[in-house]
Length: 262
Length: 282
Image (tube, rainbow over all chains, first blue to last red; front, side):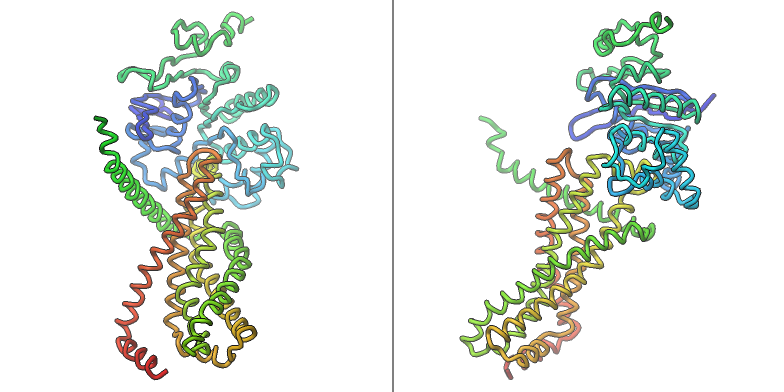
């Protein structure tokens, strides 16, 4: 049996008196692309940050490639984390650094590559996301939002991760840039075989890139024992789901499998 | 009867007490993370040099202006009092003593808490709300080691130096004003300054400034790292960084003065009687 890339077992996350996640179970298999959807405040981004261990769960277990993260020594945890890449919603580029320094950041911190090699990786990653090497001296504030997202993706890909997290990758972008980001997500998977986890509200992105869709429901709208995952399945099932809460969220935006085939 | 209203003063005291201990605990944990970060190695040169420049070099004008005016104000304020006692020739002693042991370290640290501490809290707070702090973690680095340790080292090493500059400039400005405007004999100014101020006073002032530097960096970085969402959160973090640093500077000043004086008289018990003898003889 294949070891899942990411596994959450009974994870709860409480901020003050507000429980955002309670007893959440979720498994992401190696190689699949999973979209996590749901209305605002349902805990999508928190789930992803918990998976990346940018937030510590209040209780429950997180596993990366079968390793219980809480039991890993901190050096090993850092090493394992380099197998995970994260594209932040606002790109989260370091505004005091140039584009080159941003993309090179993780490589320099890892301390495993000579500067010449780092330069080659930076240029090739920028090229891969469709950016010319002539922007490397610019600061993040000097480039557009769409370019920032692509630089953020290049920065995450520079470390050759096995799993990529995309936090609302197309939010705030025009349709052209949204499609470009979707194509990049798709090509990252095709070229590098990277497992993808996408948090998004954009059902077109879901349609273009996801194999499996997980829909979360806000904890405060559920009873204590109800599962927060109200849908978990492929796109074809999402489009035809008769579950009222799923229908309410999805509406008529998703094309039916028949029209997709046409 | 509304019990919440009836108990509100007690609840308020309870809540404030709880917040104080939670805040203090959080600050202690943060300080421990800084120490752990220090243990894992010194920051890289290209990371720490710009911070040293920002904290040190760019603070020099503020410190020069502060030191100059403190020295001159000290001369103006003490001149009338000393003249009534026919002791105006000893202005150098009081200006130098006050600057070196108290006003220099405290005012330099206060200025730096305003200039450097608030800027640090705002910068780190902005990085937090724009997820740059999370991005550092996501790229396999420790945000405390990368962001906080260089700022901590810069404050701890440079605030004593800036204090020394403030002290020196204040003493010089006090001398210039006393000599040129108040007509104090230059020789007497320096003679009494040297006679009354010991090496221990200078060292004690600098020891205080090291602690002030630790407090400013720890508080400012902690406020930045734990700042609330949005522009309001960043603004509040910057303000709180200054206010809390200022309170910490005053509290530490009192504690350190007591401790350093006790240490001094433990090491040199004869100094008490010597000081009294010098006082009587003069």
